Structures are given as structure tokens and as C-alpha cells.
Image 1 (cartoon, rainbow, N blue to C red):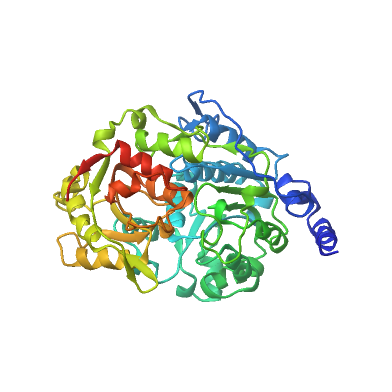
Image 2: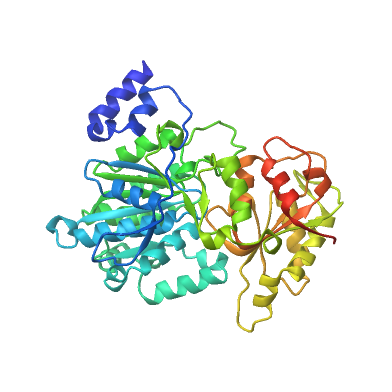
Length: 477
């Protein structure tokens, strides 16, 4: 009865989108686990546009761009493993589509909305759009931020925010009154919104007002601006049940693009009290799979490809040629996990972080260069260990180093990543998706800290760590 009512509701409100497999499957078909179809690596291709000359795309990116630009394809889902250029693809697609629309009379009211969950992801897409000169010089896009975001930004992020502010490409709703908003956003055709906590929240905020983007909603309604195209970032974290409300709240949307990776963090985190299926789970087959990664050293990418991507993920020649002896290291610590409130910590591993930073050639080169900000992230699976590591770093020469949990870093990258595993008795939170995220953040060096003998055992869901332990250069603390 409920299902029939929902089907009738969807059909009445969004007939066009109901014809899409992704939407139809949510209410009309049983769950079928999906597997990305094979896409051969035929080298790199150029975008065939005189407005975007000499921009290199992989085969998967070109296929995805063709689907996004297809008039017959109103819903496009793109799976992009770490480092495969989802942000670059989105910026390219948004840029080309908006440049083409500049001469259309209806384009004056139409808005492309890019929705993402984190400040880091929003900054990434904003910086990518900034490089599209046609958009930046006419201030055709705005990055929506809160007034406090700069308090939490660091290094490259602060520099990016400052640069975007100077160019007039950032809008902070609480800085202005409703009357000022229209003039401030006059000519804006692309809005990049950051929303924390859950994806459902952006829908409620944009439709009914409140919190971060209250004035954005007021502006869109008051100025009769229409959201005609929507790009959803981190789609692997978006519950399938949220797709239909998106289309209902923004019922003028004619193009929906979902980018993400179901092999990374799922909706609301792996420990969500209610099991949720991501939007990818109901889309069979995936219309596009980005197969070429440009971030992770080849030896690490091979492991991730075998475990999480059915051996479909490939590396650029430059990344594939990186010697394992220069990019994967393991500090073997025979520490002990300890209870820390509701979390856990390992004091011996926390102390070994200093050893990793002192031994990293990439980090030390940057650390010893006047004015340089080291590109490094120390990560762990547990809040207790995060606090322990931060306490140690704050009294060391490396207090500028960022420390975070794996659940907070999806979408980010650094030259050097130091990963404290903590556990010595059970694997704890070390499941395949979290491990995939953790191992795929570093561009040059990965430093593992843990009890190597423990992790050399075959732990279910943690096979990638075992393989890393076998190939890493071992260093004693």
C-alpha cells in the first residue's frame, strides 16, 4: 500500500525522472548488488571543445562527460575511486555547460547547484572552477561558506579562501542582509554549498530555510532563480531514499549528476544505527567508472584495485613507476591498545608519530624550507588516539601538523600520510571501506604505525593492511 502510494506520488511529481533506472529502482525493483562494468584503458583523450583546448581526460572521464552532456540522459551516476579526478570532471562539465548556456535567454534565471558535505570538498570544486577563466572573471560562481569556516581551515585551504575572497567568489550569507544578497549574487550561475552532518539536511535547509544557507533559499525564491542542474558530490554517502526528495524539492531540475564512490564511506558512516543503501546500490549497471588514478603511488593503488575495484583501477605511468621502497613505510611498534573512555588509544604508537615525521624525506624537505607549509596528515580510526597524538605534537616542533580521524578526511589528499592503527587485539573499526579511504590519501609517502606481527595475520575486512605490511620498508621506533 505504502509502496503503491509512493510510486503514484513520484509519477505525479516527477514523470521525467521516473524513467531513469536509478529512480525507478528505488521504489519499483528489489536490491541487486552492482559491479562496475569493465572499461579498457585506451590512453588519454582531449575534450573536443574550442573553449577548453588541450585538457586531458581519461577514457572514463570522457565517457562520463559525454553522458552528462547527453540531452537524453537526465540522471548520470559516476563512480570515481580515489584520485581519479571526480572534482576535475565536475568542474569541466559545469564549465562547458555554463559557457554554452551564456548566450541563451533563459540562462539568466537558471542556476547549477553543486552540493557537498565537507568544506574541503567545497573548496576543491571552487578552486577547480576558479581555473575556468570564463567563469571566474565574470564571477559566475560563488562558494557558500559559514563565517567560522576559516577558523578551522589551514595551510592551502586558508590561502584558497583568501584568494577566492579577493576575487569576489565567496558568499557568506550571514555577512549580508537579504536586501544585499540579490546584488551580491547578480550574474551568479553556479552555487557551491557546504552542508555538514547529513545530506538530508541540505534539502530541508534549501527548501525551508535555516542555518548555513537560509539566505540562499530566500534568494532563489525571491529572485525566481531556478535550480536547473544539480551536481551531488560524495554520492556513495547519499542514501538512496534521499534521491526522490531531492527531485521533489527542486522539481525544476532537468539534469542530476551524482559523483562518488560506494567503495569508500557509506551513508552516515559504517557504524550508522540504521543500515542504509547508498544511491549507487540501486543503479545497475554504473553508467560510468573512472579507471585512471593520478594520486596514489602505484604499489598502493594495485592493492586497492585488487581488493575494492575488481582490478579495474589503473595508475598513470608516473605513479605506477614509483618504487615501493620510496613510498611505503612501516614503523613496527609493539604497543598495547588501551581503553580511553568510549574510544581507544595506543601511547607507544602516538609517540612513534614523531619518528615517522622525522624520517619522512618529503615532510622534512618541506618542514625545513622557510615559508613552506608541509603537506602532511596524521590519521587514525579513533578519537582517543587523535587526542593522544595531538597532545604529543603540540609540545614538539611539529605542532602545525594536522591530525584527524579517517571518517573526516574523505575527499582530501596530502603528500605524506601517517596512519596509526592502534589495535593490537582486535581489528576494531578497520573495515574495508575505511581502510580504502585511509590508504588512498597520500600522494608521495604512506607511513603505517602499528604492531606489524598482528596486522600480518589475515583479518577479515583488513586484507589491504596485511598486504601493505608485506611490501612496506620496516623501520624500528
